[in-house]
Amino acid sequence: MRTEFSDERAWDALRAALDAAGEYPHATYVSELRFAGVGVQTLVDEEAAADEDDQVIYMFLADAATMRDPDHSLLAVDLADEPGRTFRVPARWFPDISANLSIANMDFAEFADAADGSGSFRGFDEG
Picture 1 (tube, one colour):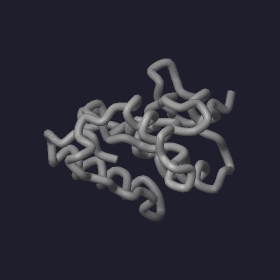
Picture 2 (cartoon, helix red, strand yellow; picture 1 turned 120 degrees about the vertical axis):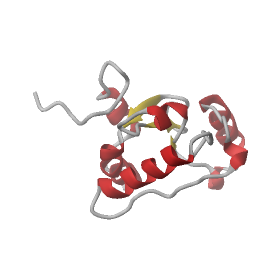
Picture 3 (spheres, helix red, strand yellow; picture 1 turned 90 degrees about the horizontal axis):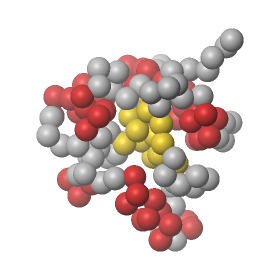
Picture 4 (cartoon, one colour; picture 1 turned 180 degrees about the vertical axis):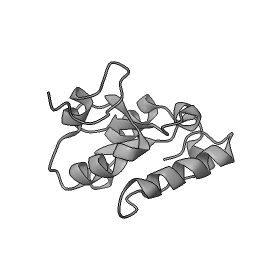
């Protein structure tokens, strides 16, 4: 979900990076001005107030930091188990994370726990 609207070229570059990251496109893009500047706490509050059938478990935000970052790191947000917990996801890792979360093969916390000191997931340390 896009929350930063000041740089159309950055948005296009992000979408291109996400589409190129895996064998098949995995992202559903939401680019609506009503989400401009929406923060994590607002999302958490809205999800808590939503009917159970309308709730989502996690979301990936394309915020101002995403648009400035050469790795196009999205902000992954947990909206269910630990509402408000976040980590960054460089575009190249998005397909793996999205696929594993969508089939419940792994939990949000597993990826968040593996984030590096900067708060970004860059794969699991094999060591």
